Image (cartoon, rainbow, N blue to C red; front, side, top):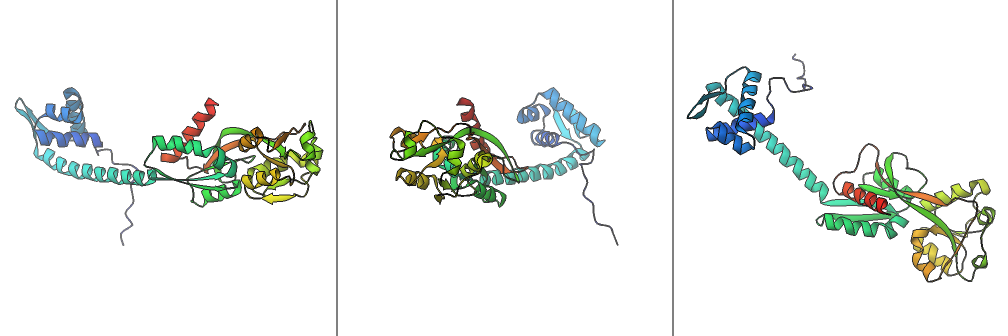
Length: 311
């Protein structure tokens, strides 16, 4: 019984490169080395040298050269026929690869945690549309844990998270920095406080984002050495809901400074400083480990990096 045919790890050393085959086809088409050189965009001496190199590599003469032009030898005609098949296969390969790129570039699926989705991504996506008007973008908003799951399951091409670290199974890069702030309604007793201690913040029932959100992760870590968070007054799954509850006077909340510009300017909410606790965090773009973004995802990542440098 014959053994299975093995696949070579590299092309045999006597197989010419694709460029040389294209040049040989041009010589066959034009009957002139000079015209063939112009056709493929190289000088005549370079073309002549490439054909001679091809002849040495194959061990046969390919052209009969004369003042009237260049004519294929019998071996040259046979090699030209083989080269035509290889070049046609390469063109089909390139067309297939381009179709794959076009399909990839026709859509972009982004998953982002709430703060980034609401307050940063709209501007980035408008800038991306100016560069890629034919790319359809879909945005899936959720907490940082949900973003990681969508990337790992193949539901998203690029993600943005707000937690303390890169979720397991993902690679990422820092694109911005953010600060969490404590805010209350103007009628709340804390609105008249010059500052709070970490202990006071830890002991107070707060209106919080749910477990799995980047905001909750940062707050949990910051107050762990101060006894940890008290039982929440409310746990809500969106930044808008948390702000609304705080504005109603239900209690204090801790949110991204990015999300509070309008409410603080209109004094619907009041910022309360906290001394002795670090509430800063890094915002990251993330993607499945070992799979650097390509196409529209790469372009969106470049936009965020450019904006980060300009801040």
